[in-house]
Length: 577
Image (tube, rainbow, N blue to C red; front, side, top):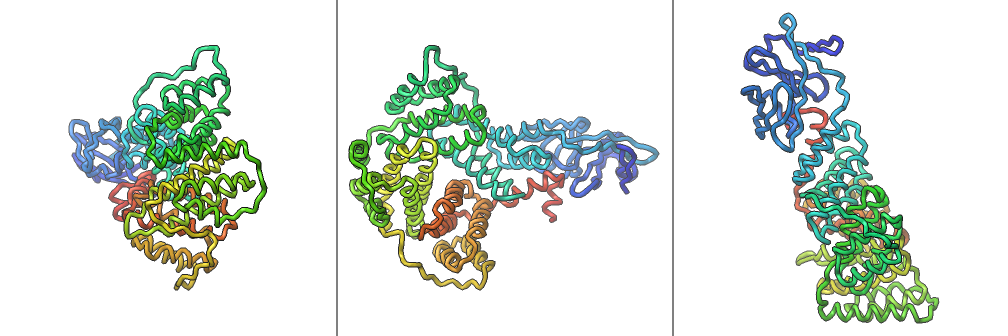
C-alpha cells in the first residue's frame, strides 16, 4: 500500500524487494516507480526506460549500471545519466528504509525537463530517427511547452540542414514542414502529434557548421542589390545571391526580398522548374509565421539556390516555349487592353490541347481581355484536379506530375499576394506549360462544366457514406473511391466531414508525408474555389491520389506509443492495452 508523508511516500515493505531483486510500484494513472535492492542499498527510478518505455524492473544491474533488456540502453543507477545517445537521462529519486518500510522522495512532479527534451528533439532531428522525434515532441507537449517553441527548433535545424547538406531539391523539405504544421492545426491529440512529427521528420538530417554569411561592404544599397540578384538568377550563380539577400536584410529591405525572388522565378527561362514557385511560396509562409529573424537563414540559403539554380541547355519544346512566352509578354506590355467575357471552356480546351502555342495564345488573350488573375488561377486549380480525378490508374498514373500541376496552380495565389498581379500573370504561363509538358499522361481534354455526374451510391446515411469511402481508401480500391466521393457529395452530405476524414486517413499512413502538400492545397482551394461547378473534383482527385499511392501501412502504433510514453506508461502496459 502506498502512503504519503510530506514529500516522502511509502512505496513498499522491504520484504517485498529481496536482495538483488526489483519491484515496480504504481504511483498514479500510468506511471510506476522501480525499486532496486542492490548490495543492501535501495534505489528508486522511473520504471519507464527513457529510450522506448520498456519497464526497467526487467533490466539488469551490474557495477551500479542499470541496463534495459530491450535495446541495451544503460544508466547510472544512482544519478540516472544515460550512457547512450538519443536517450533521455533516467529520473531517479532519493530512497531510504524506515523500520522495514521503503520510503521515496517523489517531489511534486512539476515538469522541469524542457531543456533536456529539446536537446533530445535536436538529436532526433540530426539522426532522422522518427521515434526519438515523436517521443521528444510528445514529452514537450505533455509538459506544457508551447508548440511554437518546438516548431521554431525544427525550423532552426532545417535552415542549417539545408544550408550545409542540400541544393534546390530541399524545397520538398520546406513543403512538408509547412504543410505538416498547417494540416496539424486542424486536428487534436494523436492526430496533431503525427502531423507535427511528420513535419519534423521532413526537416531531419545532418546539419554541419558553415561559414557565417556577412553583409557586403559599403556603399551598397537596394538599387545595387536588385539588378545583381536578377543577373545572378538569369546566369545561374546561386552562390552569389545569398550574400546579396543577407545584405538587403541588414540594410532594412527585408520586405523587398520575397517579391524580388518571385519576380526572378516567373521569368521565361525558368519554364519547367515548377518547384521554384511552390517552394518559394512555403518560404514566404515561414516568414509570415516565424518572422525574418528565425526564418532568415532558410530563406536566404534555399531562396538563392532556387532562383540561382543552373538550368542547362533547354530541349527543343521548352526552348520554343520560352521564346513564345517572351513574345506573349511583349504583346501584353505593348498591346491594347480589351474587355471580354471569360469563356472558361475555351480557355481550358486551349491549355489542355497539347499545343503550347495555342495554350499561350489563350493565356495572352484572357489577360489582355481583362480576365482577373484570380479567376484564371481558380480555373487552373480546378483543371489540375479534374485531370487527377480522371487519370487512368491501371498504368503509371503520373501522380507526381499531376500533383505538381495542382500545387503550382495554387501557389500562384501566393505569388499574387507577395509580388502582385504582373508576376502572377507570368506564373500562369508556367502553369500552362506544365500541363503541356505532362501531355504524355494522355488525359483527354474536356470542359470543366459538364452535366452533373450521376453515380450509383448505396449509402443510406452520411455516416455510412464516410465509412464506405474510408474503407475504399484502406483497401486500396482506387477504382471505386472516386465514384463514392461524387455520390457522397451529390447526396448533399458534409464536405467538411469528408475532408476531415480523408485528412486523418492520410496522416495515419506512411505515405502521408508525400501527400501532405496536396492535402493542404485541397483543403485551402475547397474554399477558394467555392461556387465553381466542378469544385467536387478537388476531393475526388485527393481521394484517388491518396488511395492509389497508399502503402497500407500506418504509423498509429508509433504515435500512440509516444503519447502513452509521455504519460509515463511502460511499453509492456501499452501493449497489454
